[in-house]
Image (tube, rainbow, N blue to C red; front, side, top):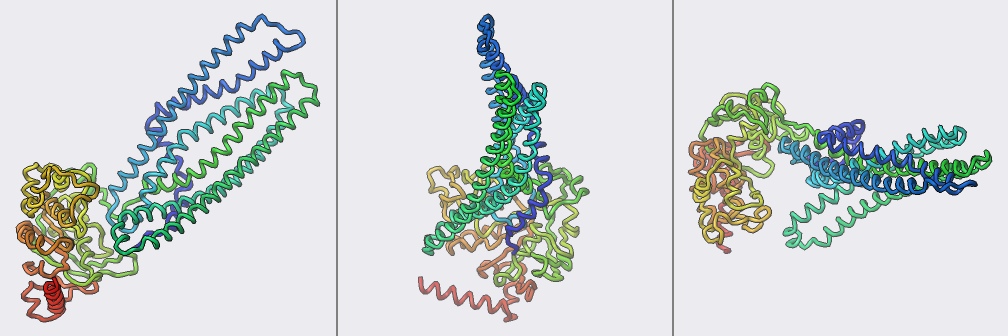
Length: 607
């Protein structure tokens, strides 16, 4: 099985480096009124900042000059108070709109990413680390939405301030303005150089963070195994090692970001000092010199603000690249445009065009590889009639699960064809096939909710009575009737309030209530005790009637009544037939059955 490779992230960075912000801007503009409101409030606030120093210059010139005149003091105070109120309104406006831009952007990014995850095939989740996906949907989406709202606000406000102040300075005194125009390119060069280093550092930090998230997820999911194996110390050492690498990567990124601000700060105030010196040399009046110094300081405050925010943007770019790579991740298994036109998509299926599935299944010269060089099946041929009960047996890695995954179209053949009812299943939609498919996993997966709600996931249109009938068919009612809330009992997160066997019974009922044409049992009884297995064996046989069923079996006692048993070894069918025929051959199946029979007998004696 192909493992997730962290180096794929670097490939995604290269691929998405040039356009993530275009995608993000389109996402923001889905709620134009908030984005436009934010832009207007920022422009209004920047205008106030640009023209505010003129009031101070007026005060210095008229109230503190050689010939002070206090006639306009009441009007001046009135304007000052009015400006304070206008400032307050402007600040409220940009906080209001920025907050909504942040919330809506986070929502849209997570929605798009999650929706695309629903389209991706099983093969994607089979080879992609859960921690990588979780980090994209949580921390990356949050970080990106924050920088989009508040970071963009800072940059736009700063840019508008700089442009407005530069225009005013050039009008007031072109000679002093030249000083700023000389220093500005130097600051830009420093910004470009250091920020490239910051981006690389934050990429490394985010990569290490994904590994920590994956380790946390694995630790929580495997808590019972950790306790039983007494490997807490080993897990702790591994986690401390991962956390240490993340800390070092983060500290490097923080150090670069911290270095950036002071360099720009010193450069800016060197420029302000030079401006004061040159202004004094030119014998400029005190009010005008004050105005120019005030504007110079106000000009470089936005410059430093932009420099710091660009550092945040570089950090956010790593998040942008990663979440956009998830949103735009293309599914390896998709329907053709012709199939989509006829049958619809997974979110908008055209059920009226779905043909009835009877259940004939055929493999024609199917070759399949997981990684492109590891051949699992080669020129495989198999023909199953509708309604047949087929069992797949063999050692681990023999190809049993591969055949089932190909039938379910969780994977597709590398070459060859798989026919359903005599037609290549690629000529019909994935949704058509999956809507006719019932699948019981070896490890049952329940969702937070009640027992009835979990059964209804198999058929959202099923009534409570139909769900209860399905539960009774698999003898789940025996333990459910003992519960306080019966069928409305909450199963807990992942079904944690129920035993493994009880969860599996509910999983069986969920498959049955769907009334599938093809039923797959992937070692579905391996997690159930012998007593429970005996209770549901007859229910399984009833559920299989009239359906094409495939049973991957570890316990050979569960396949004795199968119409056809396929004995797998190294991706090939080495024997086939029913139970009695295979025993009479005294071949590979005979040896498997004999060894397991002896093992079960010994275990029974030891109990």
